[in-house]
Image (cartoon, rainbow over all chains, first blue to last red; front, side, top):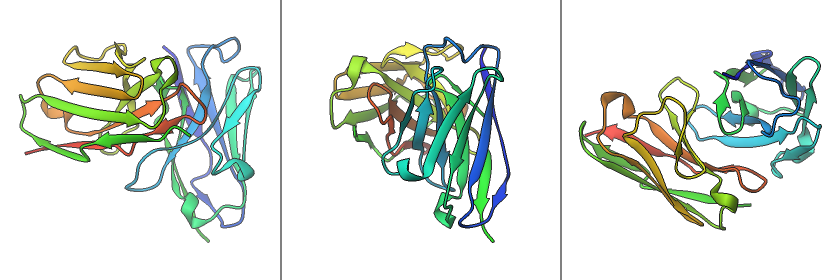
Length: 114
Length: 108
């Protein structure tokens, strides 16, 4: 059974860049027919799709975030990553990685505050 | 972007009752790639249904999905206490993938 798990800092300062990593176990990213995605959920709100990457490195982003987001994949480590630059308080959320739509990580809370 | 609308926003029911949740898309969902997710308080979403009607591994058969094109339904035949949660639909047929705003199923 494929499992995914997020890791990264819980607190980031405004204007800085958030970096999160998703580690995949129980299956290989390489050759998978699924997209590997990032989703976030601000406190008390709904789910927002950030973007996704294919094992080949092809990426697709939510147009509302595209100018600030980079998603990449490292098949040798069986990981994929998220970077969001120019953070504001509005980026405070629980961030999830997923093998879409099947397997979700437990999520990691990221707070943007000075 | 394919905008998803869910109704009702809140569904108040008693254990044992039948729940019917609706998800409507602004454009036809390619290949009916429509998923239903359940989120309990403090937990990550988990997949219930993919491809509009295919139950995920380990999901009880009281959960069923139906529909095609732009109109989809999740039915819970008899509500168990653990089913009171928020339910989201997600389309993954076209980029960007999108989520509905959710339906909260609460205890009446």
